[in-house]
Image 1: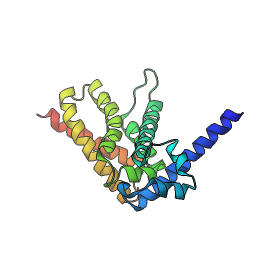
Image 2 (image 1 turned 180 degrees about the horizontal axis):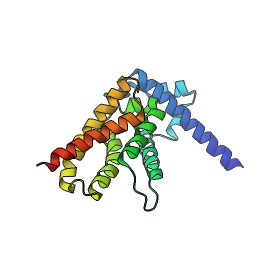
Image 3 (image 1 turned 45 degrees about the horizontal axis):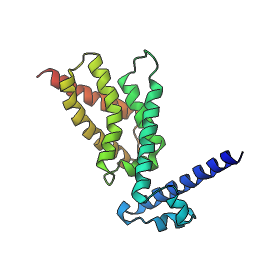
Image 4 (image 1 turned 30 degrees about the vertical axis):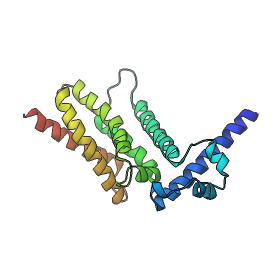
Length: 192
């Protein structure tokens, strides 16, 4: 009984720290956020913060890793043994997750966010999409790499535009657009 009570307290503490950090990140750049500010906002002491994180950057890395794991988990649910997955359904799952976690994703995937992290998120999705496209012989692996590079950068821009428009378009619409654009690139590469 004691162990599960401690686990709940740790989860709660991490959640409060994360929420405080995100609230601060909405207002100012990462480099200007201090552990002291996070602790004051979360109503915890510094020792508690340092028992979970080494610094503000470690906290950000752990939040980013958690988001990546969650995106992977979302995509893994689509794949069952032997089941083929539609590219649009795959992309829609990503947009659904982004919308459900809009506050965090808006910060991490915005223009102010870390471009290498943004690419990691898109790579997770596009690895699976590119595999679907090459497995179906729609495009060679070599050509897929060009499409892949272009599409990842474009997807980051599309997601940022979607956030700037307050996510007015549905996740399904966004997924269909991304896949149509990608398929258009594939058709162009087939012609050459």
